[in-house]
Amino acid sequence: MIGSPGGGWRPSLGAWLEPGGVRFRVWAPERERVELVLEGPEPACDLARDAAGYWGTFVPDLPVGALYRYLLDDEGPFPDPASRSQPQGVHGPSGVVDPGTFAWSDHQWKGLGLEELVVYELHVGTFTPEGTFAAAREKLAHLRRLGVTAIELMPLADFPGDRNWGYDGVDLFAPARVYGKPDDLRDFVDAAHGERLAVLLDVVYNHLGPDGAYLSLFSPSYFSKTHRTPWGQAVNLDGPASEHVRGFFVENAQHWIHEYHLDGLRLDACHALIDDSPRHLLAELQDRVRSSLPERDVLIIAEDSRNLVRMVQPEAEGGWGLDAVWADDLHHQLRVGMAGDRDGYYADFSGSVQDLARTIRDGWFFRGQTSRHFGGPRGTDPTGAPPRRFVVCLQNHDQVGNRALGERLHHQVDLATWRAASTLLLLGPETPLLFMGQEWGATSPFLFFTDHDPHLGRRVTEGRRREFADFRAFTDPAARARIPDPQAEETFRRSRLDWGEANAEPHRGLRRLYRTLLALRREARLGSLERDQYRVAALTGRGVAVHLEPRGEAGESLLVVACLRSPGPVDLRSVAGELGLKGKATWRLAVSTEEEDYVRDPRPPDLASMPRIRFERPGAVVLANVASRASAR
Image (cartoon, rainbow, N blue to C red; front, side):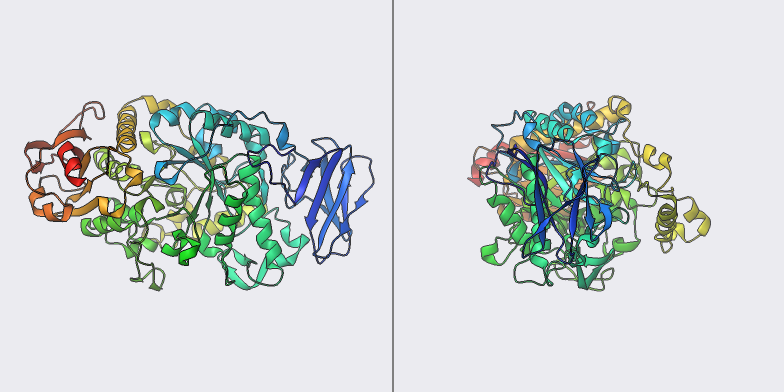
């Protein structure tokens, strides 16, 4: 029996246990003959075909762990496209797995609501020195104490070689063997739930990696004949036979939720899921996944560069019904304003405090304006969606790993500025996402790394360096040659977190600040804010202020004042109207980023002349006012 809280769901693809044996089923509609090849002395077994092109058979008395492949019209043998395990690598045989033998202890866990979400993104291979599910499990208490509520695992689909940053997966149902066995992932999720942490998984449905992808051999109908993406042919979501392709990806999503008890999915690069059918795949997917497990909260979050508010609107209102969408405009404004980036898509952003304030207020900046980078209008009006539907960050795997040298933003700005920006992130109205190690200012980069065969690897290395030819810092071929080689094992090793530094200063102080701010976010229930409960204003070129007014007994009215540049005076009277500050108010200091607990050489801002604040260097203060809460009611 499949071990899941939603016991009514059963797989229809791959290999799964039934009483007395194992059921096999695969889609290969263009093939004339499909045979099951078991590792060992048994002869190949013909599968029976149904009218839709699915081939299947039942093998009695086959043990868990049995290895198998498929022959396609005497070609192959090839691994199963819905394999649950690839113990010998992506080109080897698939393994039979029984998810029902794992002893779950999370029976009372019902998932997490969007309003509770604080996401911590991590890469299993670089999160710990060991790079395994078991080692990551030992860090769960650290994450709980930090105050995050959900872990987002970068893609786990098995990949070629022994290391990959995650986006070259080819076996979409099989956790990468280098991280551990399938039950090791289950153990990680079960332990996370025991710590009251949700677990989300980043899944990639817009393309497959360049080595070990066998889907097209089973059927060319998996890929579109009319649509293309930067990775080549698009996945076929709207052409002939697309209903079966869509079913494959929907079942993959259901499989992760049911067989591993995951609490949600982050869908990679949804702008590359080209679908002109009446009902977009994303709308179908979220509906079918949730319907298969109605007793649990399941979160479906998209990454999409288009700033489309319809993605998070209900289907009844013409939307796709997703819970949230990654909104990178805040990151771009901060990186341009604080680190001076201007290449690529950063050319679209000013980094001014006025534009930063607008981005915080709206959830994203582009809402229909012309984008030079995209060559046309970008974005839609977001004001119909509550702020929690926008996932924002100071760094994530893309914004670090896609840089030539893998620099994190805190590597390029001083710690005082980083503390101020972190306060804006963690106490802002949108849903915050942290990238592993940022809570202590990790010194390790996060580089792009692969382990392809030498021929493909050389092409990947050359392509990686050619990608930056138009960037100002890399116009010189000698500079490009210094970009770390993705194929080098050292590139991977450099990307691993150094946990020893987390308890040394100044890292420990930064970690304490993150814990304080996340505790305040939780106490004030900022994830429940509606658009009429916060206001944002730019501060005379120095930074921004955010006034947050939770309703009911959720918490005090909070005023976050962040100076990101040009230390000096800030007079809140000039923006009192914009912030909704009425009459005289008595504010108490709740948090300052310049307290001794957080910094070795504090230079606290002068609050003696409130509402005038003088910052000695970049920083942030959080002020609380109990009286304003009563007036808001």
